[in-house]
Image 1: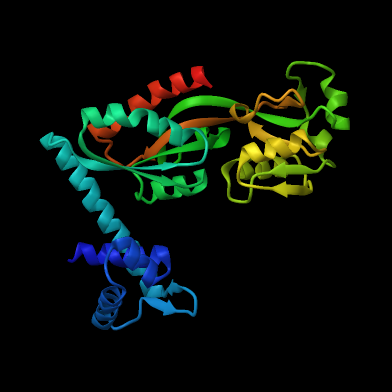
Image 2: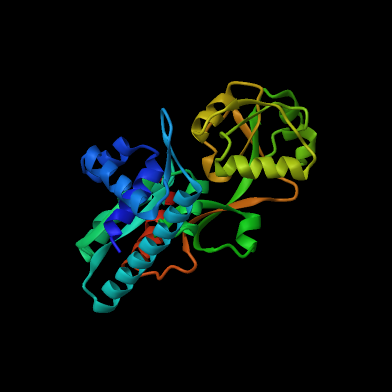
Length: 307
C-alpha cells in the first residue's frame, strides 16, 4: 500500500482543492491530479465531486479517506512507539493551540524541549478548542490545549487531560450596566442568578468556539434565549466591547482583563472550565510527549506569575 498516496488523498480532502493540496504537499498540480485519476480508475468509482469552486467527497471518497486516516494514524503511532522503545530520540509532536495562552506556553517550552530532544520536530497548528478536540479524537493530533467544561471533566471522553488551571465562569458587564450595577453594589465578586439577565443583550464568541458552546448550553439549561448583539472569536475584543456598552458576556476568570470599568459575578450554581493539555486516550504518550507535557505544566506556573 502506498502510504504517500494516502497522505495525498487526505490532503486533497482537507483542502477541498487539488491546487491547494499540491501547494501544501510541494508537488505539481498535474502530478496530483494524475494520481487521483489513476486511483479512481483502479477503484472503478470517483472519490471526489468536481465542483466549480471546491471538491467534495463522494460516498466512496468518504470511506477511502476515513480508512486512510486510520491507516496513517496506525503508522504514526507505531513509529512513535518504536522510536520510544529504541530510544532513538527522533520523531515529531503535533500540537493544537488556540489564540491566547497556549501558543505562548509552547514557545516558552520549545528551547528546553529541543535541548533534550534535538532531533524532534514540533508542529504547531492553530485551531479553536472544539476543532482541537475533534482532531485529537480522530488521532490527527498528538497533543492539544483546550478548555474543558465541568460536564466534560466529569464525563468519560475519548480524551485524557492534565489540568493546568481550573477557572470559574463569570458573568461580566460594565459598571454602567443598569441591572448589573444594581446587583453588584461594590461587592468583590457576588453570586448571581443568570435568569435575572434573561432580557439583557449579550456579546459572545462566534458559534463553534468552546466558550460559546458553554454559554449556549448554560442558556438552554436556564430556559433562556437572549439576543446576541455582538459576536467575535477573540475574547479580548468581547471584553473591550462589554466595557464600553450595555452588553453582558460569560467568560472564564483568566480572560477577565484589568479594567476598572468591568464588574463580574460568579454564577449560581458555580460553573467552571478547565484549561488543560489533552491527548487521545488510546494514543501511546511517548517519553518526548511526557517531557513536553511536564514542561508545559512548569511553564504555565511561570506564565501565571508573570501575567
